[in-house]
Amino acid sequence: MVAVRSHQFEVSREPQNGGFFPATVKKVGRIGPLVRIEFVTSWGKTFDVELADSDEIAASIAIGDALYLRPKDFRAL
Image (cartoon, rainbow, N blue to C red; front, side, top):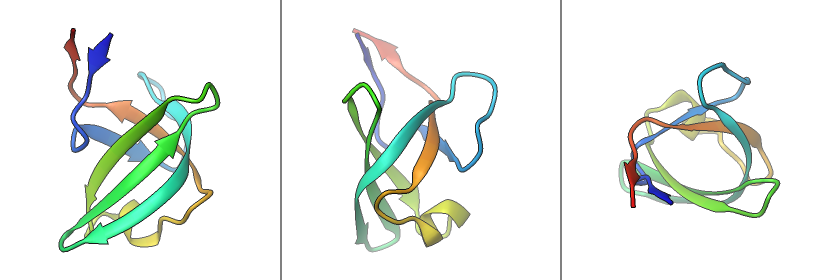
């Protein structure tokens, strides 16, 4: 099992090499300078991600968007 903090994800609209996996936006919440996004994968795993509202993807994200995630840093448990 691994743990990834919500602010340690990279988000892309296009598939990339190097550990990206597909996920769909389930919920979006804007809180001050942050955008909190809940993603769900095709295998049913959910991930909470935080992006700065100045991020290009965060500015235009919507429920149902199919995006790609990659952990920037993680810890084995």
